[in-house]
Length: 239
Figure (cartoon, rainbow, N blue to C red):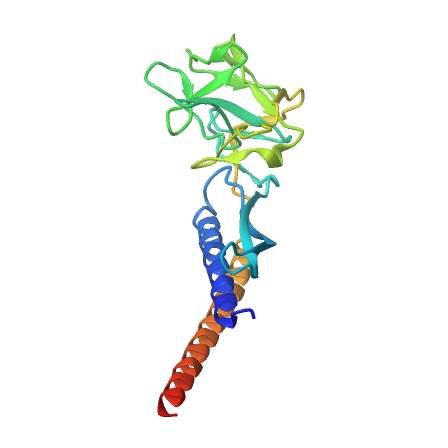
């Protein structure tokens, strides 16, 4: 016979990570290039190896909403946003990763890097910019003082939902069947702009309130079942 307390506790335990996920989204409302995360659970029936009872198993699955965020003008030519579905390719210590966060800068060697210091990749590797008058075209070509210095490596994925989320606003094509990057022919680079987070604050707050209410309901049910168990135990002791 299914244990009602176990079912309620399992439901309670699935809600807490969802609440943390929404809190993480809200905390990154003002983070350029941040993509909203959604935590779901795949429910499967499994057999307990000891009791042979059928139980529900909750398998967490995180989905990323890749909907583009609104563009914000900054006036800084090293800030870049993409109109298409592409990603900037950058080089981290662990290898090539991808991002929509285009608030780039120059390091002390005049190399184009992310805020974390990762190299922003061009078609031939890292890009060095020497000059004052920096211009970046819609297809990613970069010039400084009228001299071409490189072209941004901007890629897209046919199945970007298969990308793995990394810390920050970065993604990697890892796993058993990693998606293959291909050059984005029409990236629509907008220099002097950044792509804002696509988090919808009102929606996140409403869903967070709903989850908090369901958690409170589960807590009340758990307390009620616990009181009933104590009452039953006391009555049995008096028989």
